[in-house]
Picture: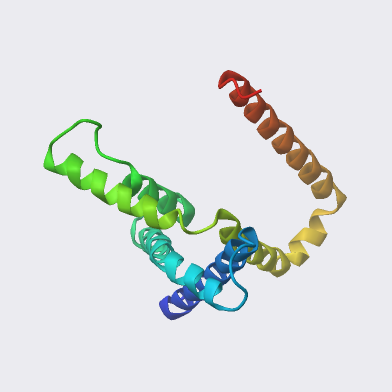
Length: 176
């Protein structure tokens, strides 16, 4: 089932607003020295709007690619690819116009997107994951207890694998 463009745009806008609100709350909570009141929240929202618009653009472009490019790739693959390509700087020490443009573009993208907290981005993702799971509750019930066991092994394996990779990386860098 394809989502109509007005609904898609509405979902993206609601997600962006959720991220901006979460970002403001996280920023103010992380800086207790800020004065009380709404001003620090508004300043955080205003500072993160350009980064949120960039992420919004990546997402919208990725969804459009999913619709109109006849490859069987998920929209997330297009979104990540667009974001990576546009945020990669040009070749270091290169003076060509393309390299200078890519350096300027990636610098601006990174400057503004860094104002958006990663944790505030997880809120809508988890909300949509919960909604999609609730939508397929019948299929989940039919899968039974075996799905729970497989999920636990996947979660535990992912956690242990991530911890091992982090440990090896920190040891290689001399941080541990």
